[in-house]
Length: 577
Image 1: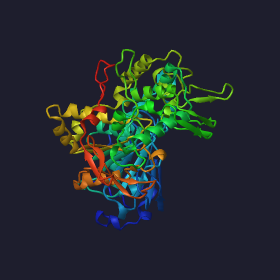
Image 2: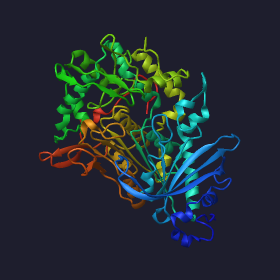
Image 3: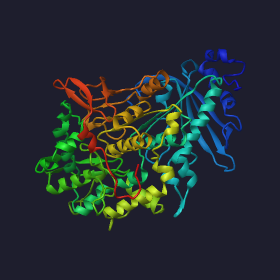
Image 4: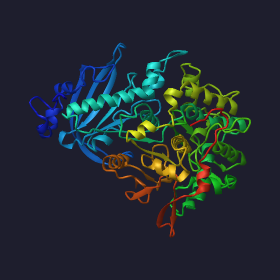
């Protein structure tokens, strides 16, 4: 029997009559902590508890959940692993008792961070869910603690980041939630996960490592296949070095803009959004951009693929060169080894070439190689095990070297960061649902990465079924949606008219709790000409096509289109899922 925790003297039948002020107290939270032995190997630390009620909190302008106002109880407490003498810090936001809907939401982080802080917690509270996050016991940022010394990996932090930090936060959070709201064993606590990028990879880790714990998982643009994904950020740099040309950023921007202009209408609707990058790949000749003029004002830029600092570029005028197009074409081709065998994939046409950003040398007036730190740090810190933030040089780094780095990362971290185990039978048999999405113009994690994993799961789990039958079977519990024009876990200023799936948790709740399968995925235009309007996204392998002069939306089966998303990674001797 669970302990009453909604303040002394309150029974389960009167629990929801309690106010937020009544329940959101340090003493009440301490009473609701999981008891000793409730979660094997973990012990709560009552002296660490904090609790404070927050009223009329509001969120607006977010991409992963809609605008809302809500009250919640902000709670923090720590636990330790028995025998380890460590401390793991947890944060939970709990809805007011009258707003609690028997739901729990786990959230993840981004880049090398296991947590996004409180950024994603409102997306749970507004749907009546307790929402939680963790620092994993290492402060939250893996790259800063990954090496105890040169050559010595901090394995506790690595595996916490890999999967068990969030898994433990969820198991602790579920037990704590049941105690706090005085739920009985007969009450179902629906458990969800939502995250994007590294948070998306973490979502897949929970599917694969904790298949019995969750009812629904939403992994957005997941950074799975870490061995390939992280090293892939250097591919654009290696292309530039191999071809001996370092294009100014505005030359590549002009190529992207021309690609968008040319491919916009291929889905049957002219709206400034490339919804069919596959048709763009089949029909657009990048050489047609040679000679187009560009003119760019001076600018500063930063972000994933550009390092974490800022770089200044001078104003620039010129025309797209054959050399610039050659660089762009080779990048879009994806990494192949010296024997022409595929090692990895690249971004879709219409994605920005952010990994290929070059550095302007004011002394020479020339653009030079600028090593993308997202990839460089992976090589130096996680493969060479040297405590540094980036490679100092790419001298002698060829396509074959990059391919070998990918295989090394794959082998070293296969059980913890690769996160591509394709047999998800346990999760499926437990009744779990997966709703995953990926921006079609993602410049950081190739959109085809999510397609390839979907196809890996389909072929492993349904080898006896034909293609359409296996897709139908997958659709009962696992659906993938590409988001037209979207960038990495975000809308895209360059394709502002594109929609974004802002209400994924609401869709998942309806699927899990009410049996409403999302045939198409609900999305919203968050900017641009149709801001505020609804849109629908097609489930893979169906692709969007507008008819009747761009007024009738359809999801169609297009085999040549599907074929552009299918890859054989023949540079490796074992399957790359």
